[in-house]
View (cartoon, rainbow over the protein chains, first blue to last red):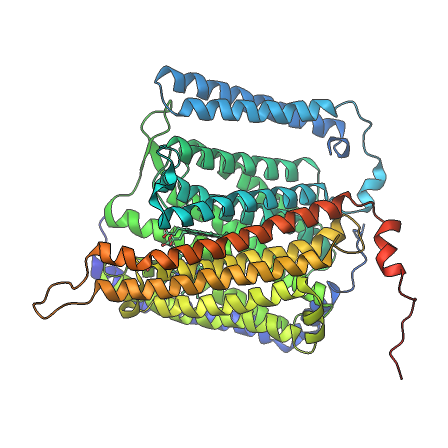
Length: 56
Length: 548
Ligand code: HEM
Ligand code: HEM
């Protein structure tokens, strides 16, 4: 298995760039999606007011 | 503790321990045959398993736990883990301070092989990172995953297997260094058999975590769990890849890495840097995202930011490792890639630090009065500081000055003492009263004392190393008119001496703080819950109203 140096560089510069941008876009969209807001707020609040026993 | 296990779990424990004891015996015999140091490790495994076995046997005939146990969380392993973590803290920091004095006074090896610098140093790093940090992470993760999922651990055997098995790994590691057993890969020193054992333990840990999460109440998984999970999952991957090796003999400790040359170096620092990222950062961020809001009684400032920060950290860190190999045989573009990602890493790192501090914004009175919360706040500040410094040091031209110098050591300890140890102490002080059902810690004054000792120790350590590192770096690159070096290496050593003494004193303060913490935790555990815990507070009239 012998990957030439320039092949790796070309791969990193093309695919790598779009892969990174796509990852960032997905993460940002998920975090900022308005529909998720209430779920996030609830998650943040729930750990403060828990009842200290398992639910079932 | 054994009484908390069902009979079948007790039997399973005994079976595992007997198998382990046999493996130990085989290792000892095989090692003895070739006069290999593996012999000693065989006996260690044997004695360790027999010791735990005695413990299980001792409680074997106690009645089974009643079914009501299922209506509460299972906290025994967390309790044990926290006590063990504190013991490792004292051990690891004691060795660290010894190493610090040794660098100032080289005679302090006392002419023994086991106490030479090259053996004590990994005993320090393993003791603090894996012994102290690892046990604290395991103990708190059991606590956090149950509360945030509102689910009890799925069984009582696996958490003990993880905790005790992990400590066997730590013991093999540290005792190995003293015996001269090492792979010579920093933070991955233990040899092949210890590595295989850790894989088994770690996979059990991952499965246990996933099984607990599967029983959760809410579909959404609280963000602290993501960080803990990233820690467990990525450490598994890193550990397996970096430790791929071929043993010279199955009856001996020595093995050879599957990689060679610059590939080996790159794999090692991909591992090394991600160990910083996922062992020393992600797991502790998980701690921070649970204990800090909980202790402050305020939800995290921005849940969104915590998610964006999470993906930033997990994704960017993966690519940053090559900044440890600037100006080496590694291709230039790989170095540049590492440098670029390191600089970008500042963004998610500061998101996390800012999120913590903004959560406390508006509750500064609590931070002022409560040393536990102050531990966590100070940790967030040091986290911001050390990540800023790291991003800066990753720039190739800056690294030309900092590499090989004490500046790196200063950066390491701003992160390790200032961030990792402070967030851990803060979380432990928060969780101990909850776990043992006490009103509060035995002595808030001692928590306060610990805070100031730890802070003073860290500041002295870090400032000493910044000074000595930059002086060192500059001395090594000062040329005279004829174009030769102005200072010999020895000159720089002499110039370092006062800073090394200062560092050792700072470390001593930090160590004393940890010992104070142990005493306080011990007294909290011993003090009966309920009535007596109230005595001090009961002196105050109930419902104290502010003057009008
Ligand atoms: C009492 C407190 C401590 C003292 C006195 C201390 C002392 C030392 C010393 C003297 C060294 C060797 C430096 C050299 O080779 O020039 C070292 C290295 C190291 N220590 Fe500590 N340490 C302390 C706490 C910690 C803690 C709490 C952690 C981690 C959680 C830690 C992690 C490390 C690491 C990772 C290294 C290796 C750094 C490198 O290779 O660049 N230390 N420490
Ligand atoms: C944005 C975050 C960070 C970046 C970009 C970063 C970058 C760096 C750089 C450039 C070095 C020096 C490499 C060399 O010259 O050999 C280094 C060393 C180190 N850093 Fe960081 N750092 C970061 C955060 C942290 C944190 C939070 C800690 C943890 C506790 C930490 C622990 C270490 C350790 C242990 C070493 C020494 C490795 C060794 O040589 O043994 N870093 N880091």
